[in-house]
Image 1 (cartoon, rainbow, N blue to C red):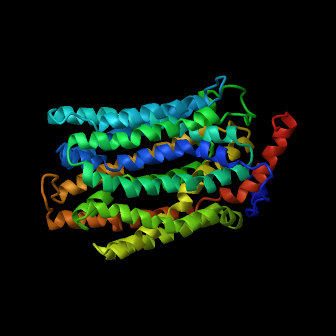
Image 2: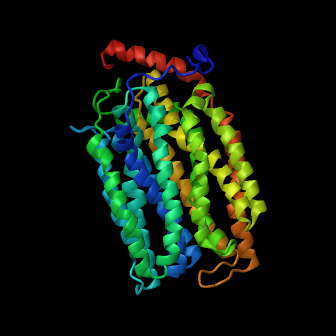
Length: 462
């Protein structure tokens, strides 16, 4: 069947007059903005544990790795749970309330009583991180694509959300990356200071994160197979027959491995010797903003795979600059711009790629299973994050790093530099090679056309 429709991806049709709308766009992206803020703040958890709670770096890395490994397992379960959900307010919408648990437990995680024993501190951080990452965030991630295809009905909407809508998240991330290190340098000098600092971000981001639940309804019926509930056997058959989802999974594994190492704060603390400069460095990312505005037009002219591979090569160049830069701020700014711009296609297109895989499932007469597909990519993302955070802690300890020292040995400084440049560079080269085997973007136009015809025949299209 695939050979008969193996055609080059055609440019997308002109956008429909039925626009997403500015308010609806913001309401949809509000939860993504909230989660983005949470992920960025969790990037400082490791240094909070090592330098404030005085937990050894190897133990911190082991705890974070164990939590994220557990998170990978719960991701697989969450996808199946979401795909089998059917309520009056929708299939995915009820899980949006998990954002409350995300921020409450994040604050509690950074509020660990300093008088606790080392074992009690480790258990506290481990437990709170399980709630944040393995339960609440997992349910949100598993339901995201399921929610999107039921709240919006057109491919143009998906592209608008993934490109223009991401500007909201992008600007929010810049605001956090600029403000948090600066406030951290002033406030996070004691356990109580950390509690106050996290609360400053947790309260507003919790309220913002609830907007999607209250203002975006599920109105689009795309379920052409299996009626109201999909059984477990059908979902497992999807994973056996859809090989494309695993290429996406590998890509997101590496992306999250690099993102969750959290080496930046160590680099600016011990190599640059000024953690406050992380703020100005993040501010330089605004130069990427024009690329975000141009992205919808770029998507219409180039295939998904070509865009991501091109971005990866830009990212690789950025890591080369990082290695050369050492403590040179202008070069570090250039490296940050290149790595940031290069990963834009991955950040923007991964959700669209999962929808393409769901369209492929529907085309084959199987359940779309967006939740299950998302759980596979969520699983590898969390495993990547687990290994990334764990590897960093272990390698730092092996290199002689200790959170109690004002300065680190040369071996630790060298390891921090490798984690900031060469190691992610090599991993992204492997991703580029893997993407050469991804061919689904050539099949998508015909798949989408036939799926739409089938829905029209079944009376599902409004």
